[in-house]
Amino acid sequence: MDSIQLIIGAVVWLAITFGAAFLGARYLPDEWYKHIRKPTWNPPNKIFAPVWSVLYLLMAIAAWLVWKHNDLTETILPLTLFIVQLLLNAAWTWLFFRRHRLDTALLDIVVLWLVILTVIILFWGLEPLAGILLVPYLAWVSFATFLNYTIWRLNR
Image 1: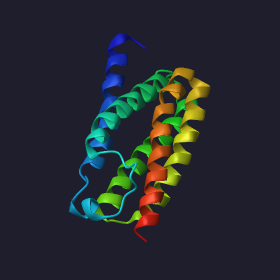
Image 2: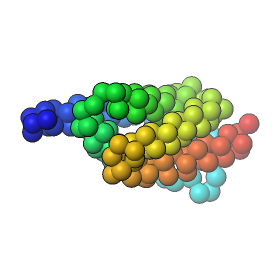
Image 3: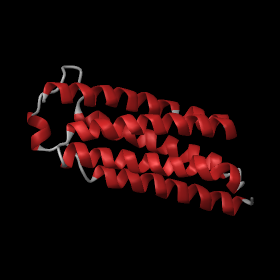
């Protein structure tokens, strides 16, 4: 692959990844969220944008590293699951902040966690650095899963 193809690939993976981020960012905390019960350890809203920006950048780089292998038979499943996890991630914000479905959002985030773990394993097998780059994402989603669960329990 020449340098132009690598640059185009990087731009495409950045666009795909941040496109999903854009979809998810359409549904942000609102009045409903301000008034539901949350644990005392709930992070302030201002922390989420910077954390997610870094995580989405790491995700895009990881996908690009796997894509660079240029062997469709090896990369089709991991990259397809990568896109699935992006969709699940965007769906979570819609379910939680727009639909106010704490229960369905919890189910979504558990499935998301499992898909992320699978993607990490598959990426690691092709490009270990790509798997490593997704570990902070899994850690953050682990925290978010517990937070979602706690908020669901407090507001049943």
